[in-house]
Length: 374
Ligand code: OSB
Ligand code: MG
Image 1 (cartoon, helix red, strand yellow):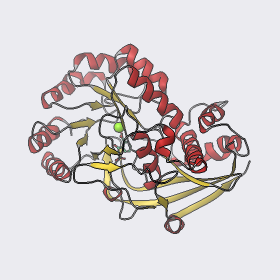
Image 2 (cartoon, protein in one colour):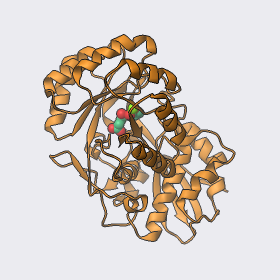
Image 3 (cartoon, rainbow, N blue to C red):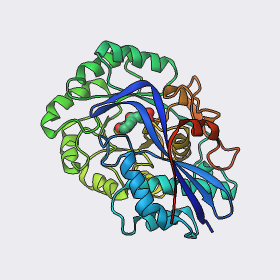
């Protein structure tokens, strides 16, 4: 039985090596909410909430997640024996609408705890089979087409298997053209609009068809599944949904409506691993490629993403970049690295996350700490 006896929440601050610019805002420093859970038999596991500093990607923020976890979610989980981590989501979801990132933070920590207690790698517990995963990079909006072209070429030279450019109205077609020219026709290239467009932009977005993109990620608002379907009918380039997908139901809707052909799975966005696995299985059954997105996670959240991305349906390179792309120094050892061929090894020789959480470093970075009471 899996029984959680203690839950400690910490906020750490981690400055990014370079500001990350998307259509709806800039991030210079991450405020990361970490979860530490201790089982009744004294085993510790770590997790991370992917909620951002502001509600510019999803409605949740680090502050709403902290409230949801302390007031409503963690008290349900504490001292509640469960057969399996897969039982955590239904427990948390009962009587609490939304707050998927807060739910995911606890749920994913419970899976890590189950892996630790069973003495198996998290990747194996989830059903992952890959020894290494292909890595992409998500590049923030640059000051000019020339700047993004230079950056994209340098990242390709560093080994990344797929380059993704953030776009917004006013920083799209010319930027993509410049990057495509710098990369040549064969490098996998995609764009992510983070919901910056409307259906009125369909003709403009169709200009992107000229650049052989792998996908256009989340061009329209999260709730616009019908409009995404209308847009997909007017484009050759596959649409990929990110913000729109908060569970398997939206994938069913996407399939029924034709709203997109690829899914970005972020376990931290969809309520955790059980729902991420359900989405993976559903997409696989429908031959819809999936890939693992990122939310500028610390090495702890990254460990969870690496484990998930080792499942067989993750056929496209993920936004699971190495630690050094984000931080001067990560909170785990060894740090996450990528080889010259753009691959990251999935740790399989140790139980749980497969990396060591650097508690001293976390203590140094902690600006707030609270133990949740039942
Ligand atoms: O839309 O995929 C996104 C980062 C923060 C919020 C949303 C997104 C992103 C990224 C970064 O693209 C991916 C990464 O973690 O490297
Ligand atoms: Mg995205």
